[in-house]
Length: 230
Image (cartoon, rainbow, N blue to C red; front, side):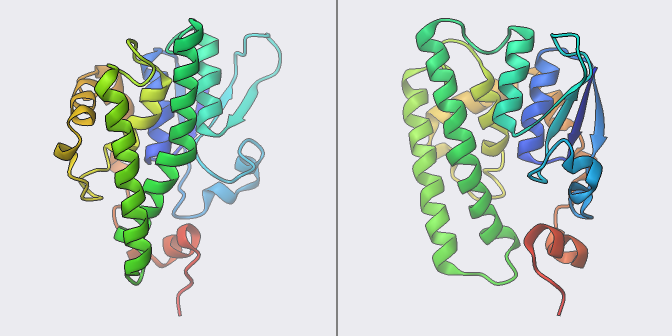
């Protein structure tokens, strides 16, 4: 059994998608990031960077004590190796899966996160910041579109953890006002992944818990954005 410490965010959904796709038994341990649960001592013991998600595998392959893990890229790799699924074994396909996985965790996620913050949540609109991150977001969509113009999935012919990592961030396109139709290969890929039942189950996890306007909650503003009430 795996304990999934998470919240309903794009990063959290990466792992619930993988768990659902692999049909792994798991228990959801909700972390209320708007109230500061991520700073609790028990959570920091498994996620020292005070970010969700994190997992505890109570049945690791070596049969020893439970293993905890943080950082989505590391968790996806761990689960892929544990199950033997969604990470190609052929040299070139595996290389591609890892490249695009790290592209997502190092580029697409952080840049879309910054664009979303300045566009949707910042207490004052800063045109320079919004435009700078929007331009980088559009550039990254272009990179993704070019890849999917020549490959069915990010690693090639087969759906992989790279796709699972990328989808939850692309699904924010409406809120971020990204014209998905301008990226037809991304749109084709997005529609194909959205039709996967396991992916949908993973994406549905915790949707009833989403705080869609954290900027209106004084505690959430302070915890999430470092903005203290005057």
